[in-house]
Length: 131
Image (cartoon, rainbow, N blue to C red; front, side, top):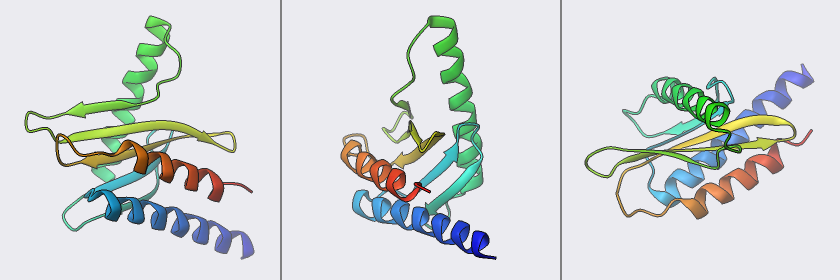
């Protein structure tokens, strides 16, 4: 029972980190996935679907791995997909306590800043992921 409570409180803490990042950056959705794109935690405004975004993150990650292996590149720092209106999906792979994860954020405006906020969120996730 104690392990279950720890897991729930950890996931809730990460969801809180994501919600704070979304509020600060006015992001409609953020999701944390494992390296395969399976969702760990998310925060989203009404009308946003974390399951759909995690599926896209899995596809983006698969593409990044193929680029790394076929072109001999180092681990990806960031992957961004832009639409014609400037909206972008930013995927930031990172590791925490030996676990590979991806923080994905939907950035709604072309010139909107996100890097500092995602750096802060990644640091907070790493701190909360220690066990």
